[in-house]
Image (cartoon, rainbow, N blue to C red):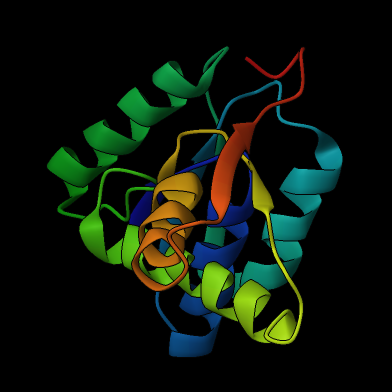
Length: 142
């Protein structure tokens, strides 16, 4: 498989690849903080190759797409995949389970590509529509 991410998605794909004994190539922008790169390597072990490529997400994503096409790898997209979004929605299930006896007015979701935000919002709006869901991003992360 191949994926492109500089964050949690990369770590999740790496861990899944290791657990399944599956080869994975994770493309990350060259400016990705070393703590994130090292976490992907640690989660993936010998089954995962981290490929630092490009100056931003779009350039790293283009490399992942090239690998998908040229090597026949399956793309695990971080935010444009309904199954990935549904999986990320399970975070909302966990949040609401922890707060079952409490009032929840809002959930703030760190937002990169939007997949986690979409998954959490979709779940929350189905089971507790009065809860507001906000996407947030650090000022220098855009």
